[in-house]
Image 1 (cartoon, helix red, strand yellow):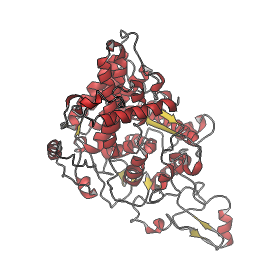
Image 2 (tube, one colour):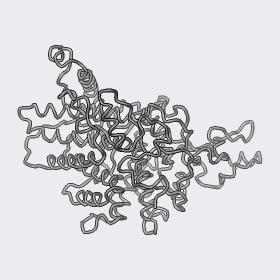
Image 3 (tube, one colour):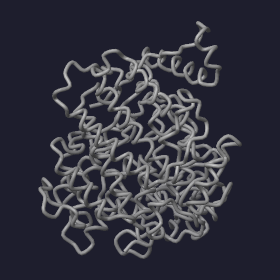
Image 4 (cartoon, helix red, strand yellow):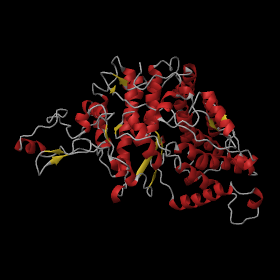
Length: 561
């Protein structure tokens, strides 16, 4: 089910929240006397505004995902660029647009005379805060949280940086408490956000399922530090009466018809191309998503007749008889194979009348549905059913489900994940007005893919297959793909199944937080020293050598076992 933002409510919400944030910098006495300041914005509008800010921004997509993370995970082949000051916008967004509004909603609830009727509205604010907080700590380690938004209410401007271990403990507790409140049938006559909840329209059961899937996200991240915690959380989720996300209609997703999203910036600084290894695997496994993720090159139609007419041979890396010859990928590192990279931006000249671009670009319309006047819509899927299924398949495969009812086998959950990923990506493509994998219900295409020898479980590398399907499903969630590759070391360098290519650049394992200034510099410096981070480091080499807490025991990129 897709959810649409009500444009009128969203506009009011935006104005209300901007005024609220501006008011935070004013003298509190002035706030009580200036009639032009909004001191109590509507909770519903705050919620809508905050929910819309959860999706990765266009800035994050360009500067972090397409230019950095998707190259590091080798999901795209692209020209390398420096780590600019525009990365880590997630950190700024959390403290400017998300946490302040969630805390303000809780504060307003506490002021209500009948506040017991707002408990479920309050509970979901913690779920949203945890969702985005995970993304922030992924790349930053210790961050302010427990004291982060006390300036407005307690004049505290120097919040402590909570350690990542402390954050996960607190967030798991907040998720458990939210699940308890949302499940409590004795809480009668509860107020709700209604349609202002752009994700679930205040369907509390769906919020519980999301909270449980977020617990699985945390469990996966904890594994290299505390596998017993991973086991405990996995079993809690699987035994919960409501459980995690269990269908496409339960995904955290929404569609905003007015959202231009990336626009022409999808090509900012350079075009992005298909990854060679991803294209190779998708071709040999007959993956229907290849038509969604990548555009065709120019080797279509009667190109073979043209080659024969002029007695010209294609470069040796292309088989002209390949039925998928229209999909060709580039190397992960452009410095490693000039025989291919010379064709990344240059056409192959056959005659003065005929030339062909050989490398398949990333499907720009899939990422930017209003590109060049197109009229598609951006469907954002932030937490998916496929992700849930692959976590469960991974957990069962590793033995974490021993002694409990996992409600299906490894293969059951794995195949559910594949099916949901293909359906979801096809729906995102349909909304975008982009190339689709299928036009019917996809049953035949999905079953054929699940049964393909390169995909079906039952081989000696089943865990690798589960990881690779997660990896493919995360094409529209670059942060999750990066975390997967970082925590597991998959794809593995030298794998006969799906190899990670040689990559000569240092790959950052964290981002940097700017010096917060004199007011909170001491806490920032203390947190960095405790983590073993270099103060003010912004270069890739240093960031590649310093790891956040849960990453300390993880393998190198490509070094899984």
